Image (tube, rainbow, N blue to C red; front, top):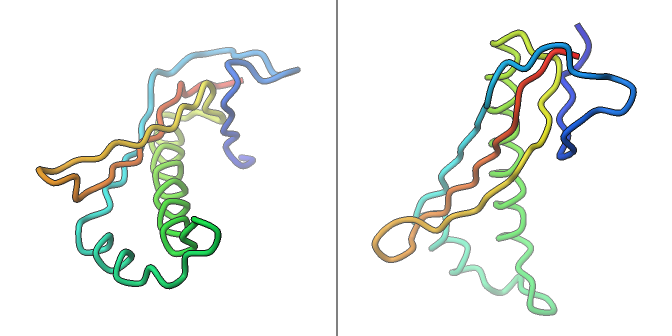
Length: 108
């Protein structure tokens, strides 16, 4: 089987959905210690951007998408369409960040 396609579009051009398998999600929560470490190393901020913070967000996003892909593959999907990425601050002091990826698993 070829690699599972992930798209933010609701359809894959030239590949109509034959079967909709349902909603699939992937979530990653980055904890407080990671954020404290990041803010402690604010010295890498250039032009108002933190490279370390952006790296953590990128890894969390990639992990959430990979978890969603794995769940879709378990259902027998060969694509996930309509993918939406959300970021939410959690915890009493906003000490955690959740990244979630949600989409519809399909067979095309």
